[in-house]
Amino acid sequence: MLGSYLPILVLFLISVFIAVFVITLSALLGPRRATARKLAPYESGMEPIGAAIRRIPVKFYVVAMLFIVFDIEVVFFYPYALVFRELGAPGLIAMGVFFLVLVVGFVYEWKKGALKWE
Image 1 (tube, rainbow, N blue to C red):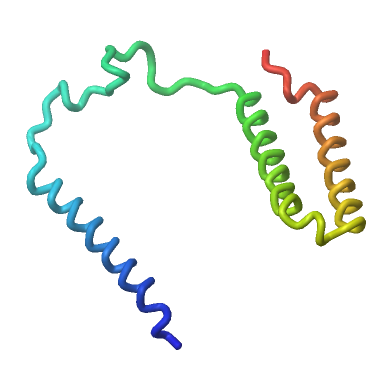
Image 2: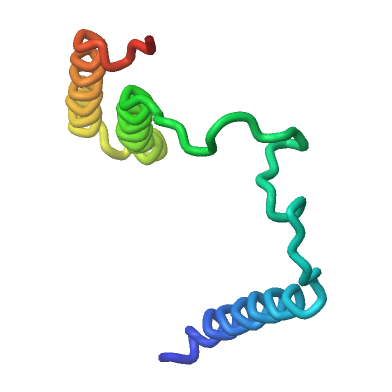
C-alpha cells in the first residue's frame, strides 16, 4: 500500500537535494566581499529617493480584500459550468441564489463607497 507513495517520496527527496545543492553552491562560489555599492538598495537602476517605508492608505487594503473575496467567490462558477446539465433546475436555482447574494454584497459595497478611490 505504501509503495504507491514511493514516487512522491523520491520527488520530494530530489527537490530537497537540488535546493540544498543550489544554496550550497551559491554560498561557495558567490562573492563574499560586501561593499557600500552592493549593500545599497536597488530600484530599477536608479538612486533611491525618499524613505523606503511609507504609509499606505487603508483604502488600498479594503479594495484588495474585497477583490480577493469576490474573486474567490466567482471561482465557484467554474465547477457549476462544468456540470450544469447534470444538476438541472435545482442546480440552477442554487446558483441563482448564490449569484443574488454576490450581487447584493457588491451593491452594498458600492453604496457604502468602498470601491471609490480618492
